[in-house]
Length: 309
Image 1 (cartoon, one colour):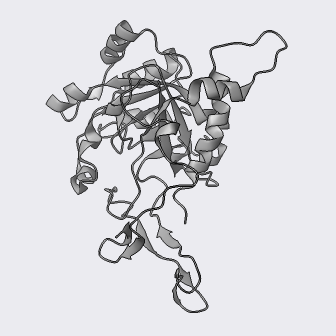
Image 2 (cartoon, helix red, strand yellow; image 1 turned 90 degrees about the vertical axis):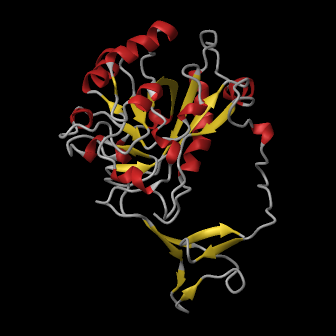
Image 3 (tube, rainbow, N blue to C red; image 1 turned 30 degrees about the vertical axis):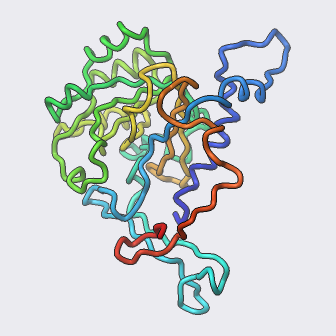
C-alpha cells in the first residue's frame, strides 16, 4: 500500500492490449500489427484522467476514516529518509480501506463466493465507453437515480449500447470534490435496480461506474446488493465525466492486485478521438524524461503530505 501510483503500470500494458479493439480485421491468416494500430489510432488520441488524487484531505466514509501520510522512517536512525543523507525519500501511507477515492468494487465486497479483486480477469483493462448523463435531473433532484427511460433516451439518440462496454453515469456530483460534506450525504445521485438489470442482463455490459461513493441511496442499497450478489464489478467515485463524449471513446482501467481484496484503488483513463476538445495527446505533454520543476517537493506538516514549494 506504500505506492498509490502503482495503477499507472497497468495503463502502459493497456495501451498495448488496446489494439485488440481495432475495427479493421486482417485477412485470414495475417498477423495483427499492434504497433500500427497504436500509431494509427492511439498515437493522436486525447487522454482524460477520470480519477481523483488520493490525499489526506479527500472525503471518506466515516466507517473507514481518512488516509494517513507520513515520511518513511529509516529503522537504523529512527529518522525519516532524507535526500541529503540517504539520497532519496519515501512515503509511509496508511490507507484505511481499499475502497476510498476512485476505486473498483469486486463482487467479493458483498458476496464472498464471487471473485476478489485479484481474481478479476485482465480483459477488464480496456473497453468501449458509454456516458449517460443525468446531471440536469440531479441538479433539480439531488437524489435522482438513473432510470430505464434515461437509457432508452440515450439509445434513441446514439444507438444500442454495445455488448461488453462500460457505462458511466454522469451526475456532476463530483464537481465539489474534495468537500468534506460529500462523505456525509444521505441522499445522492444513483442508479436504480431496474436500470442496472437492463444494462447487465439485456445489454450485457461489462460494468458501470458512477461519481458518488455508492450505487444507490435506498435503505438496503438494493442496486449495489444485486450487483455484488450476481457477480458484477463496478467503478465508484469517478471524476471529470463532463469532459468525455457520450459515445465513441474507450476507457482504460488499471488497479493493483491485492490478494483477497474486495476492491482496489483505480486509475481510470478515457481515450477520446483526436479532435475532442478535452484531454491531452502524447505530443502535448513531456513524458520521457519527465519535466523538471522549479519548485521542490517538500513535506508540509500542516497538510500531512508532500507539496511543491
